[in-house]
Image (cartoon, rainbow, N blue to C red; front, side, top):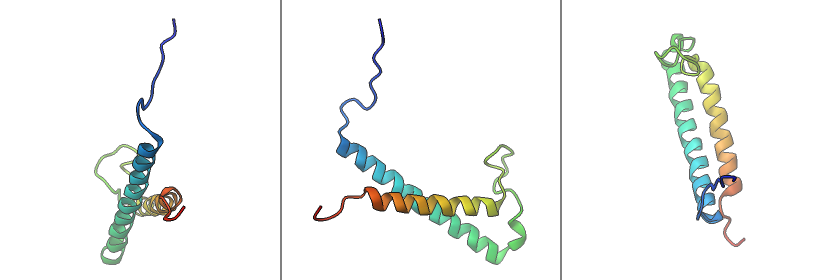
Length: 92
């Protein structure tokens, strides 16, 4: 007897698209905020860039601040691109 795995039972493709759109927009906004935050740190305290971004000594939390800025910018760009691709277009 095999168990049937049901994922997202009763969830329509429209609901999935709404969740995916919200996820991409959230990645874009938060990635952009982190990148702006570290950019401001680089202007005011450039000596902090090689320091760990967090006090937690477990990867990925102990990445350098400049590495976190690069990852945040990439997440922001990817989130914006995917948000533009999946959002509903008027008239289509």
